[in-house]
Structures are given as structure tokens and as C-alpha cells.
Length: 159
Image 1: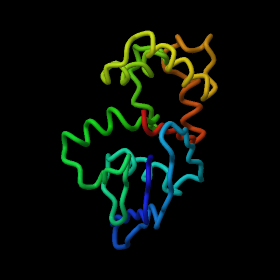
Image 2: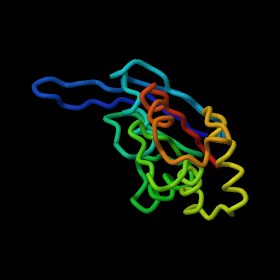
Image 3: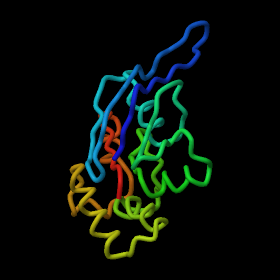
């Protein structure tokens, strides 16, 4: 379970303070897919960076399966990112010489998931975001760039 309590992220921009995430609280049960949708500049990317432990909040807590992400050391954060959370970045970070399905399967391989399970999970995940089986062998290109430009972020918490 993901539990976020009173999460805030502020940063300095020139001579004023920007509040990118302001006092967010939410819970997401393990295995549930969640979508964050909002206007440009509304804090979606900042919130995901916080949830993915790529950035630290100004205040508030992020807890996953009862463990406070903010107090984890580097090795625990690596395991957290590898085992507990996955998300598609706005700017992709895809490997261009791998197909869509291969890009989705790659992190599962690092987690020790068997090949047959990786293939089945990747197919289901791609279909959930509208990438049909006939397009899953394509290399990153216009189809995926259009999805990112739409500002849609999907995350999976838990195993």
C-alpha cells in the first residue's frame, strides 16, 4: 500500500518560492493502477518524482507497505525503485533500439521475473495504455511520443 500524508514540495525560482505540490494526502492499495491527470504545470511530474524517490519532499511522508521512503538509505531506495514502483516518464527514457514490449520487460528482468511472466505482464500493461498487440513490436516513435505529449502518467505500486 502506498500512503502519502501532507506531502509538499517547494523550490526556489529566482526571487520567489514555487509550491509544486501542496499538502497532498492519498492512499493507493497494492496492485492498483493509478493515473495522474492535470494541466501543464500542475505538479504531476513533481509528484511522481517524489513518489518514485527521485526527489525529496519539503514536508510530509511517503510510506510504502509500512516503510517510510524518506528514511530509506541508498541501497533500500534502489530496491524500492526496482521492486515497488514503476512509471512511464513524460520524456520517456526508452531505449530506442528496443521495441515497446522489450522496453516494458527490461525492468522486470532486473527484478528476476521469468521470461514468460515478463512477456505476459508486458503485453497486458501495453494493452492497458492502448498499445495493441500488433504495435508492441514497434520501436519507440510517434505512437509513444503522442501518448507522452497528452500528459498522461500511469503508475503501478506494489508487486
